[in-house]
Length: 168
Image (cartoon, rainbow, N blue to C red; front, top):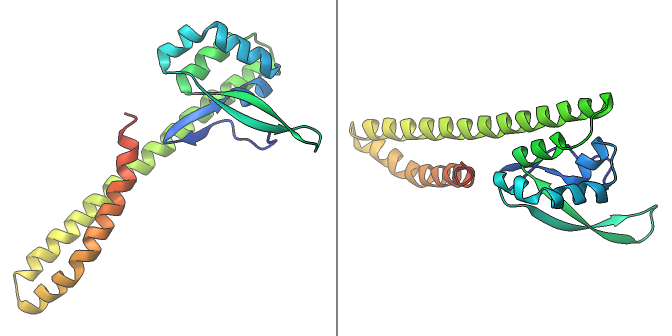
């Protein structure tokens, strides 16, 4: 496992934690974490379908070995860690993991809000040029030249906003 793997990663606009990160933070064997996930799969799937991926893990700089890894959303990870035993170190990890999910969710929401603000500013700028264009042909020529740029910038902003909408 990558020593610097973040607690929470964003995949397709969704904050996720891997079973490897959880196993490391909980001081548990990864195979035991996967067993716990499978044992409680029905309960965990109340919060979304379970997603697994296969990664090649490097051992001592030698060749790689394939490992199955579960990718859990915030609620799935919270349920999983609630099923695990507590020690002071484990409780501290649980706090860090939950805090990181909230931090990541806030960052994604802030980005989406910022995109909406940019889109609103662009619409206002476009309306302003329409008003100016009505005052004369020179301004109309400027507006005509600005239209392709408005369309391009609007499409770019809308394409960045649209993927985040499918997860709400």
